[in-house]
Image (cartoon, rainbow, N blue to C red; front, side):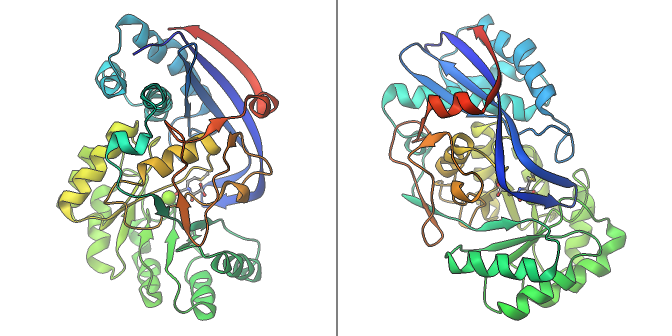
Length: 368
Ligand code: SMG
Ligand code: MG
């Protein structure tokens, strides 16, 4: 495929709310944005690493290092036929999935734009809009949480996900369930528990949750299978699933009945699609997770979630929840819990360069 240069930007966008999880807090979204420039057209990819290695071992600094020193040079070494060939090209470089996914996303976007095709059509998507829910961070009080849930239920979101941590779990869920007996409700622990906490997790069985997301450590696949034997609530894995191979093992040992797919966590769109297929084969429904993305990553998530086994509402809620101003047009806004697939080619949205420049704090350019 045609490629002239790769531009790597560090971008900072203030968030409209503090997003608190069991592992930390985000107030400003700091991320790397990859532009694959073919001269007349550009493809865009957002890297979902954060500043600190708390959700995953990658960071903005590590991703930028790996992109600059290894991934972009790999592109230079051999002409690339298309984005499908990218995973094999960078396979010798271990791990660093978020860095790989960002560059791969820019290549997928560019390749689709060159053909004037939507990304969803290139990957086998089957929907014109995708069902979405919201992920609500830990709040200063139960009252504040109830207000937030009420607001998002009223907006029509299809599922409400609450962040929990040891000591702040059943009480939150009980309060929400009492006020909203019929909503589709889930919780996400971001790996904060161990098997020794099984009694606290079993207490959640009383509330009819659709699933508990990532209760145990990211490397504790076997422990999740053990936990599943004593829980009535299905387990959904997020951090533990980094590849289609992980998904296959999780299915085989009964560690997950639901899987959260994130393009960045698994190393790219190709691997995300493989996970989708492995799960479909195993009868495991999937949904598309979120990493507080700008419109670039958010649009890619919508494209991915058009695949047929994305049957549960994802975390790709309206961009206006997160940012006063996004860097893309048209805006990615859901209505009644449905996010329409944006109509343009590639990821479907265009980056507004003037806005992007305002949020860009550093820029590097490499010939490709
Ligand atoms: O994009 O609305 C969003 C965030 C969704 O909860 C969310 N993401 O574990 O699923 C997850 C978290 C990880 C990101 S925390 C900064
Ligand atoms: Mg999660």
